[in-house]
Image 1 (tube, rainbow, N blue to C red):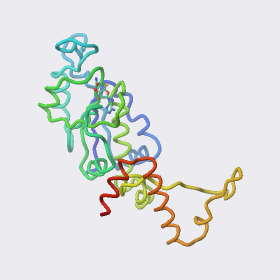
Image 2 (image 1 turned 60 degrees about the vertical axis):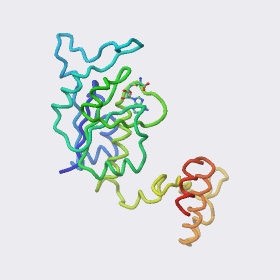
Image 3 (image 1 turned 90 degrees about the horizontal axis):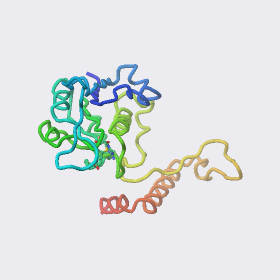
Image 4 (image 1 turned 120 degrees about the vertical axis):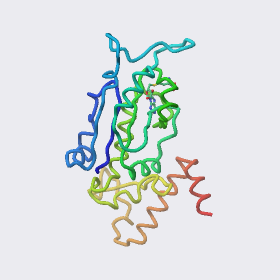
Length: 230
Ligand code: SAH
């Protein structure tokens, strides 16, 4: 069974969107993964197809109704965990991406408005995942980020299975700089060592670059890397 993603959204027409192009899109057409975007509104029961209501206790915005969302979840046959994109969720990291990519798939709920009724989160055991400390207007772009990161790790999706190896975060460091031809461009040369053919020296150079970049830009990652080394 290929990796199966089920999306619950008020805007199913947003999918596959960018996931239908490039690497993920080719993999989708080749059947290496599957995507089903389901319209939460299809489970609305009243004449106006209402999916949201005013927050209990007052406050701005609207809240996705528990009955409608739960019905949408219950009607979805899906593989793997149930996720909810949410700014207060567990931060999405490469290790979480790896974990999800190793599984059978997932169902992901895209929130809108102020969010979803807490009772659905609890009652349907939704794991909240955040893509960063900023607020989007809806969960769809966040779900696309999550899927893009997961799909590229699925077997057969990336051209070269080893091209993920020295990437940012894979071993706790950011990536070294890249260069390609021409060797001289606008007066700037490719670092000589990269043209030397000395693979051990090149590996050392890359490692030093990665360490220096991580130390300068991400003290948090650097501290974790350093303490892991001891
Ligand atoms: N009132 C909420 C924000 C709601 S934003 C709060 O203050 O926490 C509307 C929807 O966008 C959310 O339900 C969620 O699904 C999605 N969303 C917004 N920011 C996100 C983020 N950083 N990561 C993941 N999903 C996000």
